Picture 1 (cartoon, rainbow, N blue to C red):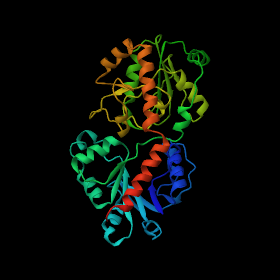
Picture 2 (cartoon, one colour):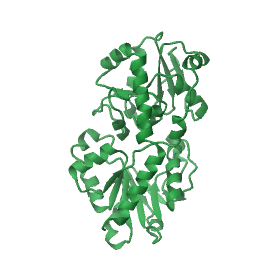
Picture 3 (tube, one colour):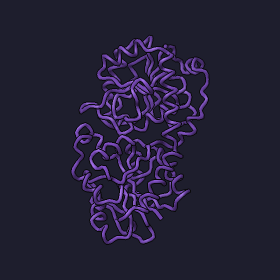
Picture 4 (cartoon, helix red, strand yellow):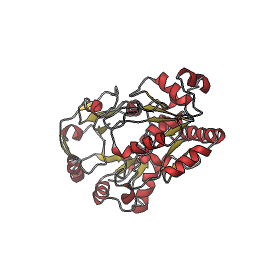
Length: 361
């Protein structure tokens, strides 16, 4: 039996856990109260979880280890986070435990990525060395770590979202009909769908783009809420839908859009966009424009565009053709079909578990 530790279960992750548990007996432990989801503008999932007592102070977490150390669990999947003090204790006690310990995480800090992809944090290296193996979110992070530790027992899950297969099956209504329904007359429609709770999303660049494109030629569809959300009411070409979980409406909004645009901190939201067949436009990862690990899913001029600066972004938007947008959108959808389905993520995790179980202690 497997035990997996998480802070809480948002809606976009529940399908993975439910699918995984259908194929392997698993208990899911959460150390944060589900009310935290609302504070972070998440929608709550419906996966059954076991509450775990914890104490948190800043980046540090102490959770009750004893339920996890039950002998019925052959494998513990803990978080690759060096602020989890209890995880350090479990790793240090590993020689006395008859359990395999897997660490699951980004592999590289989003905020420190530019530095850590060349010099991984010493504490992460130590955690990984003490474990039996690692679940990485993406192939890129696995390849980075293999460059430093060639014999690492690592597996990439290809992080994705709940409901991705349903989105891939969406047959959108006629784009012009939808634009008429939502009173959008502009030739080019960009859509943004992410929470406004992280400075790294660089919403200032989104506003900059809105202010430097013609309101007669470009429309912007905004989905998402959060404490850092700007007031879009003053822009006649911005259509703000706030927090939106109605799949039918999202299907329509994405279907009528041409391009998914998110300046920074691109993560699982781009999987949703690519599933709808939308090319992803964003900016190059740097110290000032941070990107999540899913950024590696974007291949420039194949399923999206990655810009060095606002000038190049504006120039490309002015010149890009419908044919180029359709080509990249089709490639985006095909990439999701081949790499980012929930079946693929679940099977990658199950394959990894089998490999960990047979690996020497």
